[in-house]
Every structure is written in structure tokens, then in C-alpha cells.
Image (cartoon, rainbow, N blue to C red; front, side, top):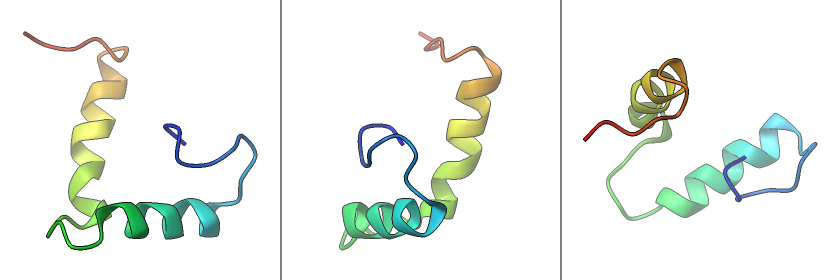
Length: 48
């Protein structure tokens, strides 16, 4: 999951890593969902 876990890691561990990574930032993992979803729909090509 984007370098946070090893391939094949279960969803509980992935969620835990996201919460650990974002701890203290004021960002909730669900706040990132629309951004990552739209990025994936654009074939992961950045908009400039």
C-alpha cells in the first residue's frame, strides 16, 4: 500500500499504518479517499 506495508498485508494492518502515518496531522484517512480515487481514475497521471 503505497510503500507503507508489504504486498499481501491484510486490510487491518494497512488501516493501522495509515492512522499511524497521519497521527497528529489533522488528516483522517477517509479525507484522502476522493483524492486517491480520482488519481487512480486518471491512470495515476498527475495534473499540472
